[in-house]
Length: 356
View 1: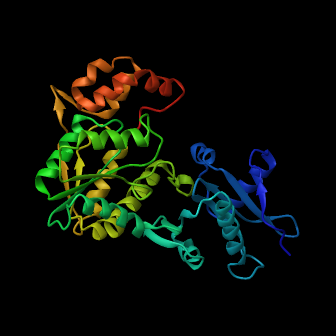
View 2: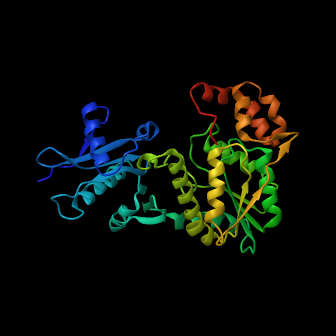
View 3: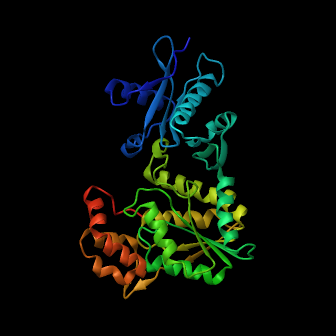
């Protein structure tokens, strides 16, 4: 007879060791520190001999590290118990929209308890369940375009950007798409792990493109490339983790977002600097066609330098923001000048400025 589901204290060395060894026995072998730090709560089930037989963790509204041993049990009973406990835990916190990243072989099990698969690769799948879903998200985006009287549209393009911060390079990419389409959706990545917050980035992009009447700027919600929920824990290498995330993202966009919003072309900026973004661009070009065309626009330059948000962030950190003001739309330049001390304080507190 199994004991009730209980909370596991992973700060206890012995508990962590048992938990990790149990997951490793199930093929989950990558325990990156940044992944472990995201965990809010971990639950576990033990059998009458005191051995761990099921576990699962939550990080925000994402289920992670779900592992189950069904030996000597009714098929799926341990899985159902631990997943139900995790969902109940989140419900008590007022969280009713859940995601899970899992190996493909476990996708069917999650679907049996109400999850819907959004996309999969050979390495893993992403699923969701709850009181809202990708269809609701699409309807919200479509409503914005309808209210702007931009639908129906014969040519629809899309751009996904972090805009950390929004530069003239981003603006140039949007302009190119706007010239070639009746409607352009600009999806701003919603993960709040950048120097400029999600709210700040979204506002800067909206303000910086408000004169382009056929451009709709919306958040990418949790359906665009995500770093916080990146499930690298069950992948063996960093390269494979990047490949997994970007491929899932591309397929989710291709199969769920693009057809629903009638997007025909995805616009990318060429990537001479960031290795991660370079891989992402390659994956998009491989995965999206023929369903969605991909158009790569050469990066805008200022003199002999490529305009890049990375350099803008570095200039802020080095107290040389004035040196890159010519790279920025007026609204972004004004924001940085007015909030320079706040931005520098974020960097001093440990905010990483070297990513995307």
